[in-house]
Image 1: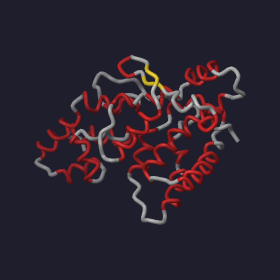
Image 2 (image 1 turned 135 degrees about the vertical axis):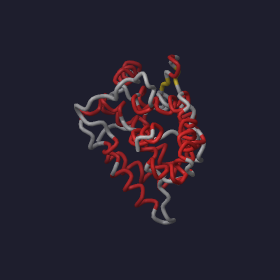
Image 3 (image 1 turned 90 degrees about the horizontal axis):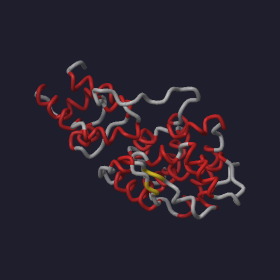
Image 4 (image 1 turned 90 degrees about the vertical axis):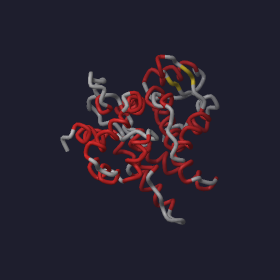
Length: 251
C-alpha cells in the first residue's frame, strides 16, 4: 500500500499550484474546498481553479515536492496517489457531507482503489478527467441510507476517468477556439471567453426552440443545459461535439 502523505506530511495538503494567466501561485487546500463547495451548490467555479489539479499532478510538481523534503522516505508513487486521494476525497466528502466514521470508510476504500493504479500510469495522472469525474459525483442524488453504496459505485468507476497508457494528450487549442479542441482543464475558461453560452442562445433562437428541445438535441437534461446557457457551468468534454453540431446547425 502506498504511503498516504495527505495524513502524514503537514505541508502536503497545501502543495497545490495554479498557473492561470501564466502566473504561478501556490494554492491552499481551503481554497480548493471552497470552490468545490460552490460548484456543488450550483455556482460557477472561477477559471483560476482549472489548472490546479493537472498542474499539481505533473511529474515536475512531484519531483519538486520530493526535493523539498529530502528527509522523508517517500516515493513518486506516494506523491501521485496521495494527491489524487486528496482531490477525490475532497469532492466526495463535500458532496455527501460525510461524518468522521464515514470519512474513515471512504479513506480505506479509496486507498484500496488508488493502490491498483499501475506505476506506468502515474506520470500521466495530470490527464485525469477531473471534470468528467466531478460531473459524475455532482449528479448523484442517492436516497437517504444508501450513500455508502453510491460512493462505492463512484469509486468503482474511477478507473474510467484515468488516462490510458500510451494515449495521446488532448490536442492544443485550434483557431476556431471550440472548447473541444483544447485541454480539459481550460474548457471552462474558453467556454466563457468564447461567448459559447450566448452562441447556444442564438442557435436556439434561430430554431425557435425552447430550452428543453435544445437540451434534447445536445443530449443532456434540461437543468444541465440551463447552466450552460446561463454561464453557470461548462460542459464535459464528451458533450462538446453535439454542442458544436447544434450551434452550426449540423445536428
